[in-house]
Length: 219
Ligand code: ADE
Image (cartoon, rainbow, N blue to C red; front, side, top):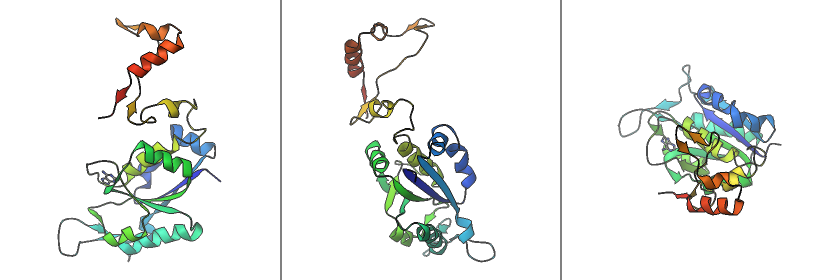
């Protein structure tokens, strides 16, 4: 069993796959730490056109995701795993942050991420959702990018995914609002821009102090 599994319900699987098949997400899957699965919402569409959306009651612009295909898609996943919890990325959700990502990483389990599209979704869909998550105070065209961000920020915290086990602990936001200190690699002098002397000193007490003093804070 992977530590965490994500089943993404989407109309645009092809938008998600390249990212999940690359770099750290691929590594996490290869090591059996994560599992990604996709459900094509279109497969649960209505009528000959496999329609998944319709116009809003009361009028207004655009189309809304309908209840029937969404409920059927979620129920098809839950039929195989009743423990799976449902996440919907939405600008009216709770704003995502590092603390919440850490919580999901610690608990693990199976999460169904429903990616809305079009102008929005029928409000009744929220009755089968466990977590409404916003990526911030702006509006994207669909749930695919938020799904990738949610997945990435959780998976990289799972033991065995990042190279140095320390990386996820020390880095930005792990300690309250602290942002990471500035870091440098070779060369020590690039076009006259020099790496701070203290970092070349080998004095770890002083280096720690310098890093503490130079840690930023989130605004
Ligand atoms: N869908 C559209 N905009 C979004 C946002 N800001 N956060 C999460 N999901 C969204």
